[in-house]
Image (cartoon, rainbow, N blue to C red):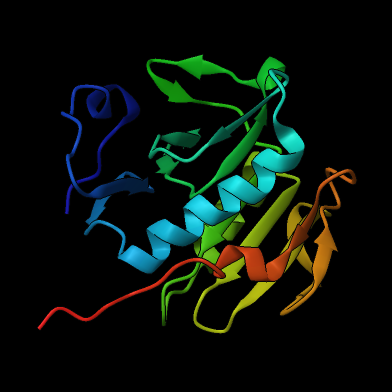
Length: 183
């Protein structure tokens, strides 16, 4: 597959009802998130908003392009991302600065190692890997150029290392989602 450069990528139309990431110049399109994924993102956003409801912060939950590097082009689509508004660098309609916190909702069997390495290289100081299947949250912090797991709570509360005033109850991430099977 041919690789795309940053200037070429800017001309590509937006994809509706799918997720588009670029990894080392290769455009990768995936299907829309499943219900549990979307609902978990909403619950994470609500838990964060309790503590970060301030114009100083932006909690982004809509899909957006986060440019990791221009060459070879790598752009990711985080699940919830928290920015201090004064640090956001937007260029050509995409964000070119690290969020202060990213949460990734893990799909069954998904390998996030490459994505986490990209977040570390961009300088994201804190990442939460949220597993609805295992009902756990891995809290990772940036250290020595990489991300290191500091805790993996499965119940009770935890405090964000980067935002010490943010304390979250793990069960809040999946407490209210429900599903019914369609026959």
